[in-house]
Each structure stands twice: as structure tokens, then as C-alpha cells.
Image (cartoon, rainbow, N blue to C red; front, side, top):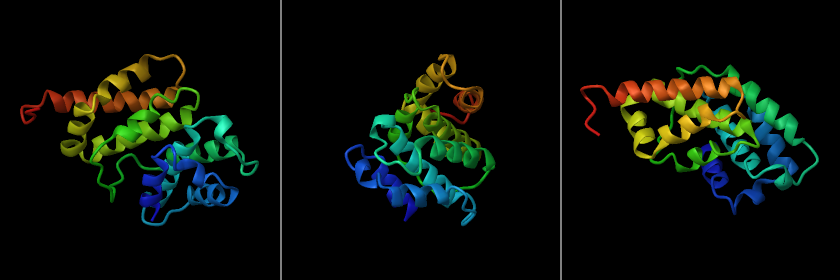
Length: 175
């Protein structure tokens, strides 16, 4: 169900429907979930990242506060094991790539680059190709070169760039 809500959160005109104190509190509390490995927490963070990407003016609730939720999201991301195997199947990274442009809310970028770092680490054959095909390397390079993102975001982006570069030059790659 969290994956489905993640799909809803990817659609800009649907996100305001998720902007209620009740929903945000539930998603925020699910950041601490250890159910199903990291899946519940990861999906809750994805929903919150997309909602937060609309900016502080779109945060139409008083509680929980945007700052509190974003800090909880970063705390959750930093607890996850980058080598976690996932029960997920992305066919496109377009919605996640859009979060890399969210310089006014770097926590959204943090979730997105963690996602790419995890997927390209654990499933390089499938996801390095997708990052390359969808011009993700350009987005990630821009992110690393931009002065705004904090160091951890840039570290994760560099991991993805290195993983995809190594994959791209591999003799088995025919892209």
C-alpha cells in the first residue's frame, strides 16, 4: 500500500490530497518502521520527499512541522543499509530524477540519491542502465558540482556516478 501511495505522491496535482495532519503524521511515524526491512520506511520517506518538494508554501498544516518531518526523514535515510535488497521494480526514474533539482529542500535530494545509490549498488545490471538511459548521470554531475547540497548528498551522488561509470565501461555493457 505504501508503494501505491508513493505513486500518488509522484503526481503533483494529487499531492495536495495527502497534505493533511493525519496523513503526514502517519507517514512521519512510518519512517521509524522496521517492518519488511526498510520497505515501509523507504516508501514513507518517498511520499514525504515528493510532498516536501512542492516547497514550504505548499506545506498547509501546522503539525507536524515541515522541518520536523524533514529531519526525521534524514534520520531514517541515514539508518538504512545501502546494501539492502529491495522489493521494488522501477521502470522509470523520471519522478525521482525531478527531486534532484529540488535545491531548496535538500532532504528530497538526499532521499533520491540514496535511492539511486542503493539500487545501483544492489542491482547494477538493471538500474545502472536505467540511470544512464534517463540522463541521470547529467543530473547527478550537476548535483555534485552545485554549491547548495550538503556533503552526504554529494557523497551518495558520487557513489552512483562511479558505479554507473564502471558499469558503462564494462565489457558486458552494450548500451
